[in-house]
Length: 157
Image (cartoon, rainbow, N blue to C red; front, side, top):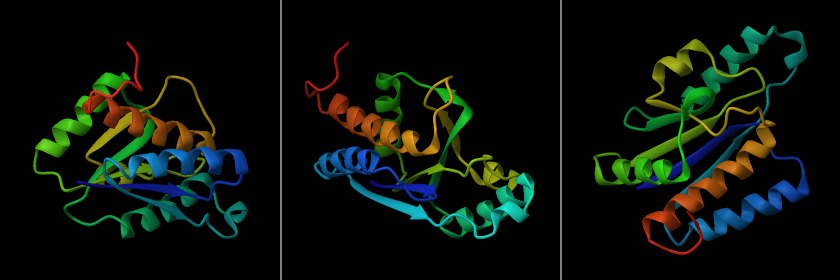
């Protein structure tokens, strides 16, 4: 199974880039992970929040293929424990899903078209985090999920 992690905007902070790279490297032992950072919109200040979401949504949807299983990382998504997230990944791997695409949107969330296309929504927490930090948290949780599935000692109950 292939996994793509699609984000709107670049990761700016060096310490976040370092942490993300650490887990991306570790994940190479478990899955084919591709990280795609889309450029932020140009002249976004001249657009309303809704216009920004629509334009970002169009860019996101251009990256999604018809058979991709798209999961939005969204504050209103289902909250899972690390064990449950590992089970989610395992269920998709055992099913007919060849490509999971996890998506982090821009600062105002997703457009209606992106929500309509999404197969699932997952929330990493009831708390709000910066989109930059969510990237690190997600790749760490993805790594944790694979170590849980392999019975490795990274995760402790």
